[in-house]
Image 1 (spheres, one colour):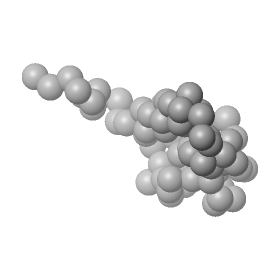
Image 2 (image 1 turned 30 degrees about the vertical axis):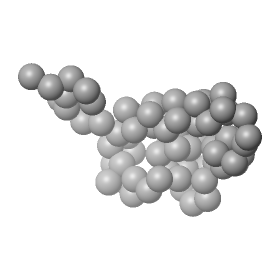
Image 3 (image 1 turned 90 degrees about the vertical axis):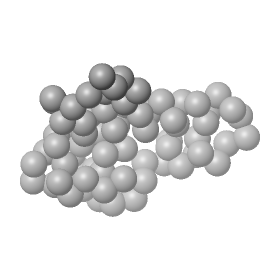
Image 4 (image 1 turned 180 degrees about the vertical axis):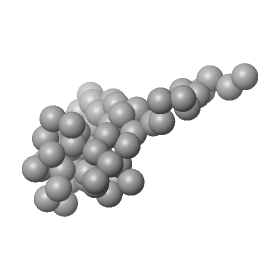
Length: 73
C-alpha cells in the first residue's frame, strides 16, 4: 500500500512517478520515460540521476518513524 496515497498500490512505477505531484501518471502503470531513458543511457551521470530519483521515491514511502537506511543504533 502506498504510504503517500493510502488508496493506491505502491508498485515500482507508482512510486517513481511521485504520486503526490503526479497522481494520474502514477495510476497508469508504465515506468516514467525519463527513468527508463536514464537507465538505458551510456552516460554514467544519467545513471546516477536515476538512482537518486529512485532513492527519493523510496524515501517518500518510508514510514515516518522508521530509521533512515544506514543509521542503526
